Length: 184
Length: 184
DNA sequence: GTCTATATACAGATAGAC
DNA sequence: GTCTATCTGTATATAGAC
Image (cartoon, rainbow over all chains, first blue to last red; front, side, top):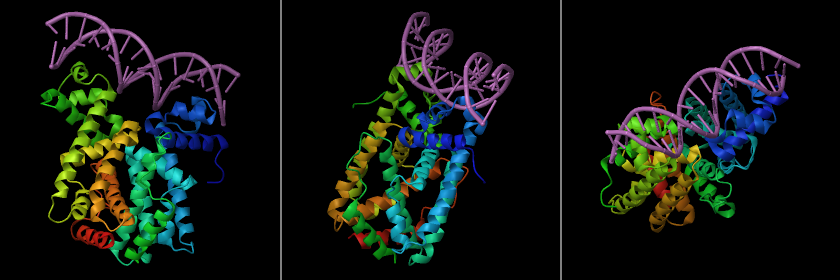
């Protein structure tokens, strides 16, 4: 764990950025190497295969998710509210990691599907003590999944910036209030 | 519109099935041709490019979505309930089309993102008269998106059949009741 | 630890026979 | 309308120099 090589992290960041901005098809090892400023051979020293590169990205995602849950549990506004608000994402490391992981999952990676499922279970366990019953818990999780899904779909087309189906500002506050009232 | 050639529809069905079962990476023109029982040249007579193949699939998806909304509006149990229940999908043509379209979207197709956005607007307009306000409308749509997203992620790994994060049976009934109470 | 050069495989697409 | 054969580009991965 000590301190991963600088170049290794650069490659991982570049691969993640490519997945987010251009999708799994464009996120090739070649493109990642170029974006990270190393040669293909250099990349392959750190990640012997594409699978190894993907695995490393997913491990980083799960680590960030664990840290994020710990932070949310300390939020004064309440974990349900903090959880929903964080589902719209604002370019934080965990948000970027989750979008990239989702791209891998939909691109066909079984490992990514498994990793995302584990992250969702983490959220489920953290939220359970703060919801009335299982139905209310599922409501909160599903609204979050919906927010996340819509947001993730939009990211891919940077030119689009569609007014977006995702509530913002006052509309988001109202939605959180409605879900909290139903769930608590 | 009259009556598309049989072989053309077979190719479209095979392409859709590949997207669902193995993801966008495995859904190649070659694989689609083989699964449909035609040669690559035969496929290319009907669809001159991969883009044309994808466009045809997305057009079929939008047509099915229009028909599906019309049917839901006639449901006696109410459109909100019918809409949520249909979000868990049961291998109907519209469900399969939506999953395949979502695979294309996450695979990087801007056209697929646009098509899915149009379908979502269709739902939005059909549900608006049956919800209390915009916040309630967004709640219903987001829960549906969440159900759909989770279900779509699961499909890809056929061996998995994870107990799944998606509520079933009585749990689903309870969820629908909770959303309806919040939204109506 | 990072590089260049190269092998292998396969996707998308074209040409033209039947 | 469907086929075979082939071209071209590009992705993953290997070999080995520096």
